Image (cartoon, rainbow, N blue to C red; front, side, top):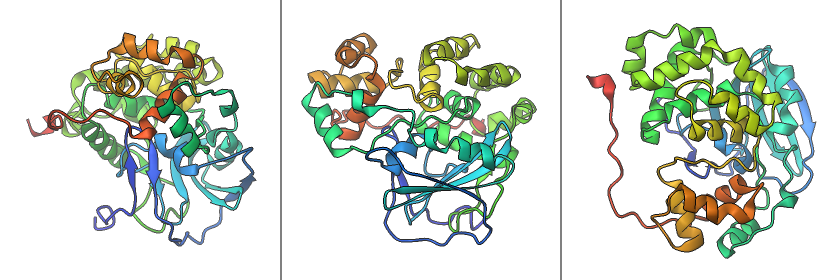
Length: 336
């Protein structure tokens, strides 16, 4: 128990997806895994690329270490696997363990943005151009896994990020399995998220204890029943993949966009229906903090084909409207 709640040396900028880590070096477990080396084509920032995959500072499937490396535990088509990614000079080193190790290493270049082409992006606004200049290593990750991004995205529907992160943490630790391999040297073990069958067998009271209402729980249960069909969407275009996801009741444009941004590296998938994003984009590009989805899409029109990248850069710029009210209070239905 003490290991689970040890002080965390890292933090995350939630909405931009940037993982901030200090520069000290940490020890790695002695158990060797399979290794693949990869040299990115152009500037590369590991923290920016993999940051969107982290669901809060306590995410049991993700760990950013003091030496700058990143650990991830995933449920791959070949089984559970653990991946450690580190950068030395201009070379990336991936080391993986478990039945899913080969799959993770095969996907490593795309995970690190090899399928992304940032050269086609042309900034049209000063704030975007400044962020683009300061973040040349931004690449859009492509995990090749749908359910891994879908379930935490459903948990984030209509609640605060703290509530969603807590639910993800509790459910993965209780119903997932320990990640294979030695694991990171600090911060406690990693966990692999539950399989679709295990998600389907989570009792109703456990959803309640985790603070997940019946609507979100029912959406996840409907999704895992057709998990195979949803995972097939990685071979589709982002637009077709969103259409397939939205066939499942409870999955709308907000959730499907959040998924394909990660599973497909979709550069043009804009998150519509978000509580904060339209106001942030409106403030950064037009000085309008009350912008709605229609105005946000109008402002992002010059970036057609790259609208998600433009929105990421705006979030990374820190050019957000000043807060006028307290944060939304966190609820916990598990207390009732």
